[in-house]
View 1 (cartoon, rainbow, N blue to C red):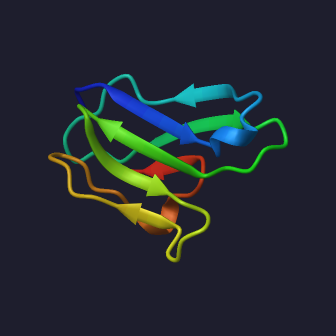
View 2: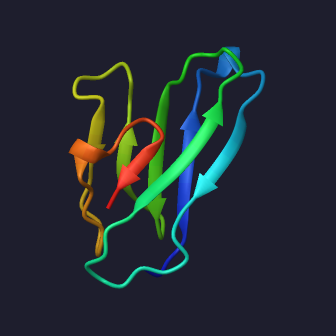
Length: 94
């Protein structure tokens, strides 16, 4: 899969002291039709998470928002098919 992947971790502004991304894992290359896990492990330093958003080529394709129901949302993006049943707060399964 070609393109740039970005992840945004959003915390309430008044409480942001430290955010540490301990691991960010994406496959080097995927053939169309392949499945893969994208993983971002992070330490919020005891703070509350507001949301996590995943993007490919400036287009959001997955969001984790702990205070909403449902917490997990997938959005249409060319070449991206998210399996919500295998995705979570730190991992997206394509």
